[in-house]
Each structure stands twice: as C-alpha cells, then as structure tokens.
Image 1: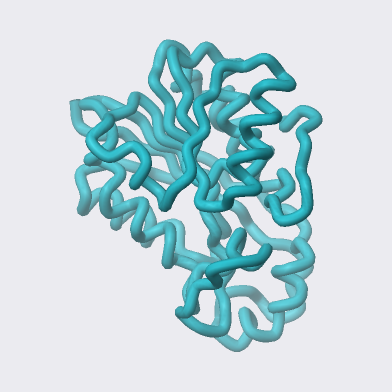
Image 2: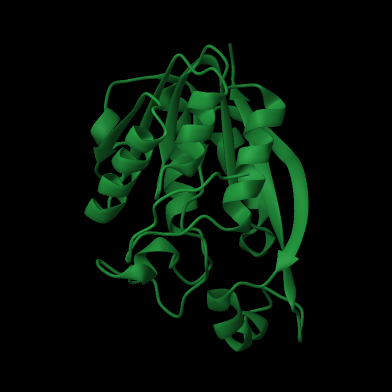
Length: 220
C-alpha cells in the first residue's frame, strides 16, 4: 500500500489503482536489483515502492511540473533514492533501457480524442476508448527494456485487457493479465457513467469497475 505522501493540488492522489500496482510490484519481486522506470509517477508512490523493494536505481517521469516537484519532495521525505524527470513518457530517458517498467497512465475514456494540456483532467483523460496513452506505451516499451526486462501496468478492464496484451505482443513483449480486482467507481468514472454505458464500456447501473494488472517480459 502507498505510504503517506504529499499530494498538493493538481497532483494525482494515490487511489485503488496505485495500490493494486504497488502490490503487484512487491509480489512479483521484479524491482529487486533492477533499474526501474516509472511513467506518470504523480506523487511518486510506485517509484518509492520500487526503491523500497531493492531496485538498483529508480527513475520517475511525469509531464506535470507539480507532480515532479511532489515526487521529489516525497522521495526526499522518505529518504529514498529516486531520480525524477519532467517530460512526456519516454522522452526524458531516450536511449536508456531498464530492467522494469511500471505505469499507471491516464485511462479514463473521455468524450473526445483531444487530450487536455492542463488541469487535473490530464491525470485521467485518455481519448474516447481510454487508450491514448496506453497504446503509446505499449508500442515502444520494448525499446526501453533490457533483454528479459519486465513490465507492469494497470488500467481499467473497460479499456480492453486483451487489446493491451496483443499490442505488447506486436511490439515484442510477451504479456498476460496478472491480476483482476474489482473496486468501487471513483468520482470521475461515476461522473461519466452515462457516457461509458452508452459506449458499452461498463454495465448499466454499474457501481464498481474491474482493474487489471498487465505483466510481461521482453524476450531475453
């Protein structure tokens, strides 16, 4: 579980998906001795968990200036060696390869494919099918993993777990669903229930959703 972290206004506060990903990270043991990259780090919760799990190094990336500052402060407060970079997904680590990639990207289906540039909606809006960031990560993740390197990411099942597995396979990562967890709908998902029902992404009247953790490895 995520420990106490500073989460100032404008920074994604750790929620159920964060805790699910952290538990999967700790259970798998992938971080031990690995160079870890955490994308969309927010408060740095997953990056700090990787550092606690014996990672050789941890690099965290976020596009939000506030998130970068929050993650740096949290790493300092918990005295954990996490390097935080600002930028778009893999941009700040171009040319580097890691033993483990973790991600809890925006995945909430939105009304349009126009991604917000500012504000809290940038933490969750991910296009009409919720895959705007997921697909970008899947398509190039293998290029940033060492041979045999591992990947762990979390998203709502409404975005299509099979689509993620297939997209990763096409890019050179053998993956599968490692965990499925049902959690109550959060405020954003509740507010968009009618939209998601109309698109067939959730059952009518749903009060909870299924989160999936996708795990995979690049060929050795």
